[in-house]
Length: 299
Image (spheres, rainbow, N blue to C red):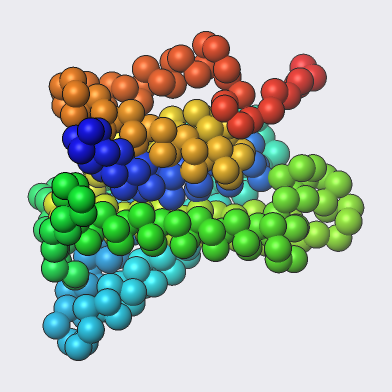
């Protein structure tokens, strides 16, 4: 029983990361009907922004908590700016082009970022500084770390903050209006360019937070770390119903739990394959996702 609960704890911790990254995919798709395959690379850039800012701040502040918060803020702001630049320079010029054009640009942009990162940061792995020393916590026969607790708590706070922003602010209402009908939102006087840019900024900031949280637990980072995580987060978004914020969170948690149980009770060799098995299954039996709604498209 303890082993089962332990797997659940590990799965929720991992799933929280996937959920944060998946939110970026689902927000951009909800507003633009675009799969931003460069999103996983923004997650990687968030880890590197955190790495270099932590090297500057490490040991200069009395509180490791304040240092961690500052590193996360710097990383999130840096990636928010990157997200806005990606939207402005890569996607806005082809917004009225075919979806295939946008898809090809997304794939090309992903490859560009990965290769530029290898050129700038180097292809060798970097080891993220331990901002908060790891401590083992025994809880009723279960073993968890303060890092796992931090991951879940921070992820929940960020997801709750996003939910409050989208549903209870004027900008969030504009974002939902653009998601519902872009042309109608323009006619109502909404600055759709600003809303779309804000959507990219928020999604990229959440991906950066995910990059920091992962780096605190698995300190080895490299320019290709976003490839597999990005693909898995995309699967999580599709599983939950891409375009649905709550669906992205649910999909991330399910995928994290599935991976953890496969590795714990089966073989860790197959933990990466489970995401793609889930993707195949959801596309075959419920392509709109668990919380998504089927749409009829005129052709």
